[in-house]
Amino acid sequence: MRGIPREEIVEYFKDLSKHTHNNKIFYGIDWVVEVGDEKPCLLGSITLKEVDIIFSASQESLEVLLADFRLKFMRAGG
Image (cartoon, rainbow, N blue to C red; front, side):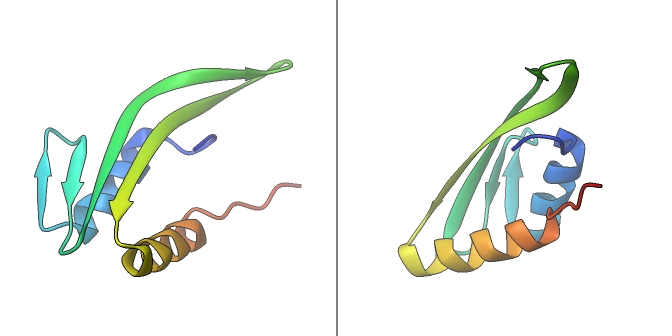
């Protein structure tokens, strides 16, 4: 994920999860998400924040989780 601060992602998963471990691993009812560390990503003269996110869930749960995640973090440029 690029352009979104890690803390914003962490807060989102804290609100959804039942348990968390070190603000890195978030456990839902039928899913687990691991949020990596924030690192810079250079795109030409622009530097964005980049965070790796690993989703683990059944196919059905993953589709719902990803759809909600994408909607929450959709950004418009201009």
